[in-house]
Image (cartoon, rainbow, N blue to C red; front, side):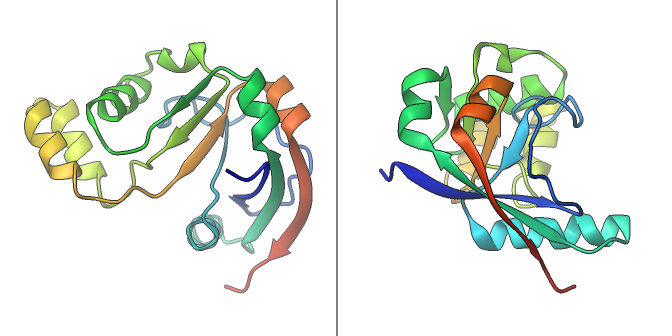
Length: 166
């Protein structure tokens, strides 16, 4: 594992000093500051957000001091779309504060490829067993959510903002 990892936040503005808990509350991993370590995914998110807002897409680039952050933070990492991930996502989307015991959460995104399965499970139209079976073979995209401002301030350094073409 690298000590410092380049991570990205998709936006329509430059965010040199990120803040936790500013966005919507019932997201996949709670009300934190969301990033990814997958460049192409971040570019796609930035362009989608920019299109919705009729603003130019911007990719904020940071360095995460992962090694030291992992020593200090309360961490939850989901390796796969599995029962643990599914139940965590569902709880967060229902507004249950299961994220409160963590400072850093990383794992798959409940994106277009999996959201139908998640919603069918939430609405009781699909069993947990069937949902897990459907999700098992999908390789997750990756999202990183930092929920603790102190962790964010100590372990994330703004590197640059890239203005993307539409």
